[in-house]
Length: 130
Image (cartoon, rainbow, N blue to C red; front, side, top):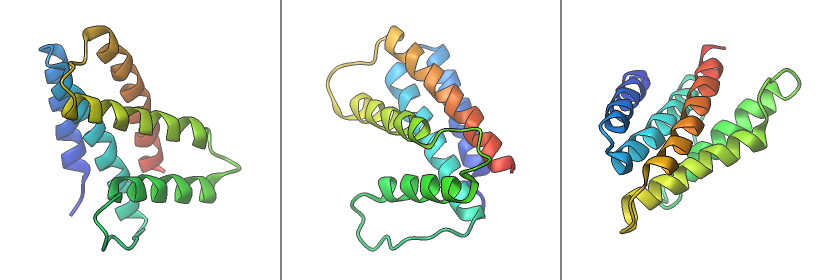
């Protein structure tokens, strides 16, 4: 089973929610789209980790992706590991704020998040096509 359909659906949902100005929900879908893309990379590359402890599974999934891709492609990668890592974790932090705080994501902040998402989506999509 592939995560491809899931991440494509999450992207469509996020774009729709953003367009309709449901910014908190859009940020949630942006994050999960990227996370599902990372899960697809890990699946395609048969990368597993011990997830018997449910705490921190997102971090383990993200770190497995980053470490594997950049260890395997360090010399020829057009991407910077630390930049990509910072953008992924920034999106994750914004998702937490959108989901778990009483404040709302405003349009200006969502525009910034949207730009980060679109860059990440394009970069990880390229990686998936390798």
